[in-house]
Length: 298
Image 1 (cartoon, rainbow, N blue to C red):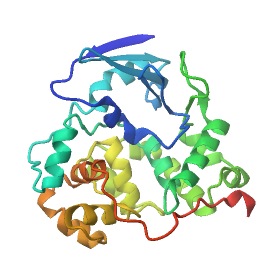
Image 2: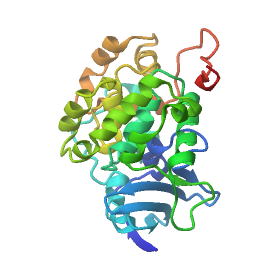
Image 3: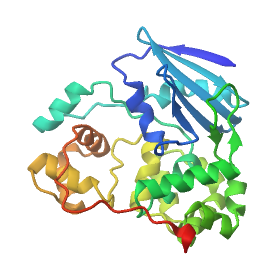
Image 4: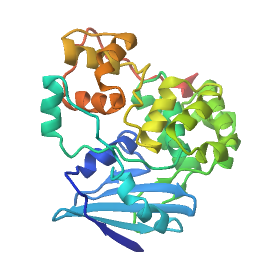
């Protein structure tokens, strides 16, 4: 085991910083234990690792196990938003000002790992979260590795790119992911080395969107996590534009309308969207929620 302590230079909500990396309830790569600690697994350049993050007396304590432990601890401050530059961000709507006051510890962290963000993002394309998260759990249970160290029972590390490329069609089917998403993940896995080597969010955006099956929404979801890009707003999200429109104007809007509303936050549109979602304001439901499909029965 390796350890590291770190004192952030301002307010920090560790739960909010790490929440974007959780893929639904029961995510095998993310867990919060009753003591409040958050556990996370990762396939680092140095090998697999498990990270445990806890907070006491304003000090963040990181503990890590596995061949990639040192890499994980080196990147702990960045993961928790130490590099998050909030300069230029000004809450111009009262609802955002209130959200900023209530959630002053919000920081956008960066993982530096593309495939661990890309695979679940592709699984989440155009489906309800429960459907995507079910597939993620199944695939990690079947093809992932056991988390090193004293991780909570059932935690897994996502497989390496060569494994994603070789998953047979019938196992994608058993996971609940249909052919289009399976092919997108397999194709991206062939280009994993180039994707992981991207030096900037802009370069990664270009590389991702050159691949079949990856568009603006998936690229934004990945870059938010890999580079902590504060402007990578998820255009094309099923809910986000409606939420932003309702929170800022009292009426739902579409993607072009959302972009117009968030124009004053250019450079920080993802950050503004995060604060808006934290307000909890949602347009009233007009019908039953979309049910999760189950391709396994097809």
